[in-house]
Image 1 (tube, one colour):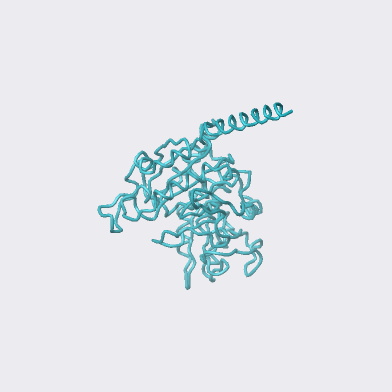
Image 2 (cartoon, helix red, strand yellow; image 1 turned 60 degrees about the vertical axis):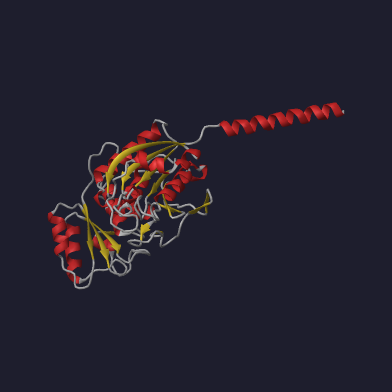
Length: 353
């Protein structure tokens, strides 16, 4: 009996060792880093002064500066653009979306990390969240200080972004932003400070996860991460949508200029709950009657723009942005206009995506 017990224990130990060996030799997740430039790839003449040029450092140099990422994933890099994100444009958005969808459709990678300047990072993130069909992780990352700065934050942010991308728990969270040891849903994150490293925040909901000591912990999941995405695979451009900013004693001139420039939609970044004065209201109503889609948003930075409050949106033919900020409302409106001009359907998009 003792011999049988000893034999059973022997085979149990052998089995555990085999499983451990298999786990230790299993391939790491395949992560591609798509680079677009930005401060994270910025270079300055001094390590202690703020002046620098964005997008100067190529992706190979960024990867070499953080060798630890190779312990987390199988890494390869690809330079998509080399610009400051103030120069980000629709053509590059479409290129990124089409490339990421291609990588996932061909099963070439398990996750994507996208390096990006911070000025428009939130816009690119939201656009991709609406157009990437896969539930595999897509993580955007940037830096507030250039790579040549003494206290640069890019290397740590990049390492954290790869950790998020490689983590199985990130699957199904949609496109996220990993900055300053926090993970944010693309829909909700925004840049809140011009220089501070903790600039990215989700004012309404907070981060969905935290990164610390090599681990990623998620605390909730956005229900606005719809499985139905906008197909931009064959598109060269998007419908033109302008943003008009509201302020005291504003005139209709910016609205008229947007219409003259060919805008198919206007996002009005209104005061308070998306409000406008009489002159602006008349211009918006006229535009709506002429089949220009009007979306009421707010300049406040947080909170919802509500239906049927001070403005009878249904009667005027307007839609509201819900809690999307003006720049993200513009993105959703551009994509919505690729599918329909029906105002009720477009309003449903704003309450769903």
